[in-house]
Amino acid sequence: MSDKVLVYKGTEIAAYGFGDPHPFGTDRHDVFHAELAEAGLNEMIEFGHPRPALVDELALFHTADYIDKVSRMSVAGKGWLDEGDTPAVPGIYDAAAAVVGAVLCAVDEIMHGNYKRAFVPIAGLHHAARNGAAGFCVFNDCGIAVEYLRKKFGLTRIAYVDIDAHHGDGVFYGFEEDPDLVFADIHEDGRHLYPGTGGAQETGKGRARGTKLNIPLPPGADDSDFHPAWRRVEEYIEAAKPEFILMQCGADSLEGDPITHLCWTEEAHATAAASLCRLADKHSAGRIIGTGGGGYNRRNLARAWTRVVQSFVETR
Image (cartoon, rainbow, N blue to C red; front, top):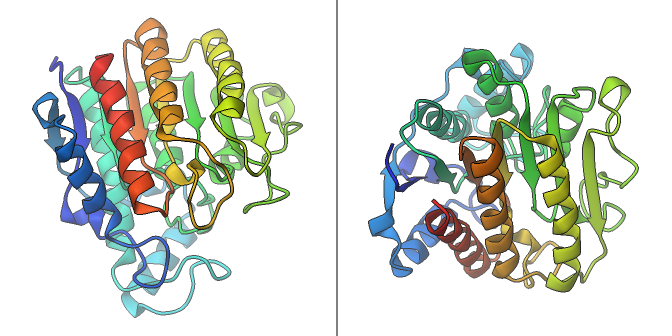
């Protein structure tokens, strides 16, 4: 097993975006990788290059009708995949499939014992539902990764931890009745921010009631609010003893993001990543994947994601 951290890069995942003036532009990939190189971490990193996800892999989470819709609209290159947030730009199917493929490549590398830690910057598309796009997210790589880990590797207890400013509704509702998906999400209160969900009372349904943790924070919440919330997440993951951890590292929770209202610093991301690595080493044979998620202030996302990778390196 390599003692380096696997980080994905490439034009395939960089292509995921919607052009100007949409906030999710294709420059996000290169901004992050420039910051990563500047941080002097490249000697402790190995770079992975994505392959496209197969239709059967997309279908682990998404409906066939929806996959076909994305394929058709991607060729046409016009219209909306949802109600007005996610445009059907030309080639978006291939770019979204590359994002999923990168995450599944990372899963394979970790499960085959080649690495313990991996990070995919253009990923964490947590709003996409099983039957539709939402909130700039076409295919839900996180949800697909959960189903892939179950089907291909026989894992059952998988933890999904989300610190994006937006609630990870596509993952939450995709597994709301599934008691084996350990879900923890700190986000801006949905009464003030899209998608308007993720109240503290939302803890799962049926047999899954009590297996999901949502922690909404008020607009303006800073690191002093994040840390006590994070201690609740640590205790929750500790008790769950997952076999694999997926971390959604959205940087739109940092102060200065143009479309959200939280005021964390990148230290929150560093703390969360280091904590989850320690829990992964204790319960999950070290296995953790970080995904970039949201973040629309370029300086913020570059610094926050780099701090996540740095924590992965320092705890490897």
